[in-house]
Image 1 (cartoon, rainbow, N blue to C red):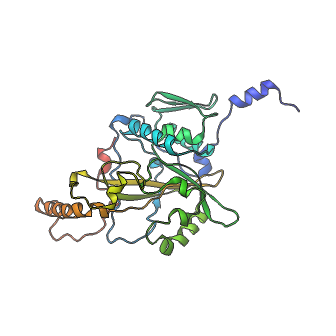
Image 2: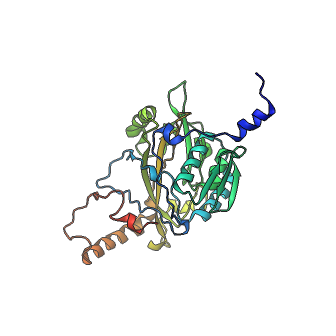
Image 3: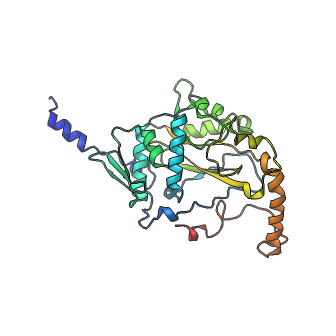
Length: 325
């Protein structure tokens, strides 16, 4: 039976994507009806454990915290767009649809989607997008202050390979050099990865299911609040020396909150990982940490005989959510 023009019109304007919450088995997030992005603060993640052992540090993902918005949303989107136009490209419709469903559920006053017309509205930035025509990763770039890296299994080798990405916050590595490479080559610079983590990561990716997404944190110490820096950049060169000109106030704790989840339709895996280097700031920061530790004891905040250990509230400090938006 031939499809008439009227039927084609009807099919197009009644499109509905799958319910990715049901399809993946991951519950939908709790809507934040009173959410004010201008006042939103990042969760005070403190990924420090005592004693430290090199491992994947994976934790079960909390559905409410897959995608977080904070007060820097407008500035971060603008910054990422400029970086992307200078460096990247890619596509994945399924991931875009999952993100749209999440944003509109978690932040109902900030985002809206009309699947009949395919129009997505961003009420924070006062922008709209035709989801039927836009490059999916361009959509993510325009609306989500997150990096997205997509890996798929290479059927000939059984290894997961980086296939598509939008990444604007890499420090010390180039996305173009990682594309098409398996996990152990993507993580080549990570200390002890080949010896201690390669087999575990490959096996974990193979067995990972859609309904059990994972979260983890990575941290580094940086001079200034840089988002993106590459070898050869003037700022990156600061990581190669211990400058006497920097002050403790110039040093920032950078925390990358990372999630890992399998897409329910393509079975691809979305992830983001990087490693840290602290040598360039240790000469200033370590003495300051000793002073701050003594100050905590002198003020009675920490018992003088306190034994260093991982706090029970790891990875957040007590009552953190009482000061959040």
